[in-house]
Image 1 (cartoon, one colour):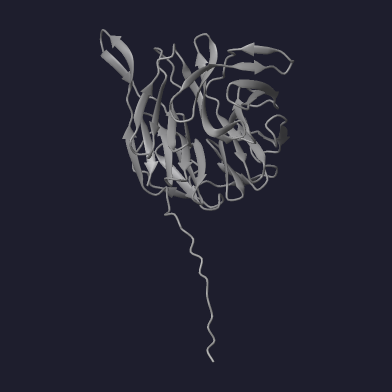
Image 2: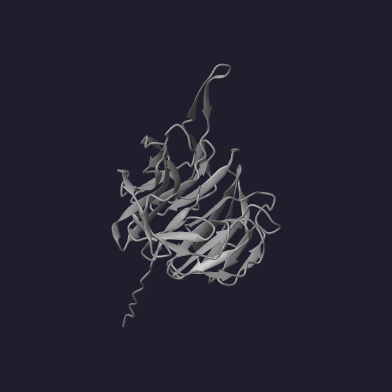
Length: 334
């Protein structure tokens, strides 16, 4: 009598480790004009914000001058196309991507400082529309083309775009065009993220503060373990992770957004500027430096092979690549 047994083997597709090898793309310099002594003058552009969605990266600068409104786009993170829409001194302030709710096909939203107030640009696929925005105030009023603050980031979650406006006001929108003011505890807010798993927004500040919200409209202060300059926050692997540009321990983590623990970074002499999570890896960047972690707690330096400030970073799960915006360059992991 035979005793046949059947075995079912499940094989998971493992993505290769990323964040160890970097390549750079030199971006176009901004033309400043002509000087009688120095001739034509150019400046490197700081690429402060990057987002990924619908198969493309969008990278923007907050540089202001000469009616320029530049950004780069890429479908592979390696080949980049320069865009300049010349929109009457429009200065990009932030960019994020959202999909779901009122934007089922996905939407990029760029908040902009405009010569006649504030507008924004929206796009599903790099065909951009300049919008006149409206804002419902906390006092019950409504106004058009309000100003945006300088270089304040935004994110999408819970069916809402949420943008940092100033030290006491955030703005939320279902569609990226009609916005509502939300009062938040006072702070020099610098970064915001959403966890779909925890159903929670977390925002951090340059003056050492933390706030959370389950819906983007009501916010609660949380106790920070250090008065560091917290500049970037992300969520992954069951953990919120924040990095700082100063302090003895320049990382803090939380499993719930409420209780926070300080962690040592891979190099506490580095002014860490941005952090992102992808492929079971946290990756943070600074000037000419990067560090990685599989758990958000234990960190090691990653050799980038170049110098120069890096300001922003995001991850594409389809490409399994991180892209970082730098001062006059774009860096990509492979």
